[in-house]
Length: 23
Image (cartoon, rainbow, N blue to C red):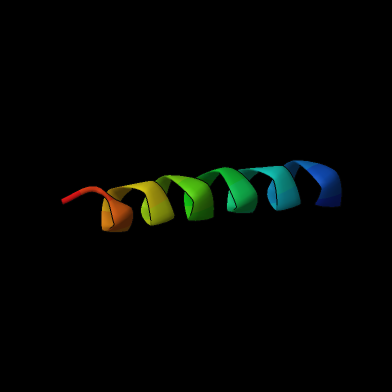
């Protein structure tokens, strides 16, 4: 269970970083 939440959190953070990095 925790693994799933952690993975989802990472995926969301990466997506957020990508959006912020994009001009």
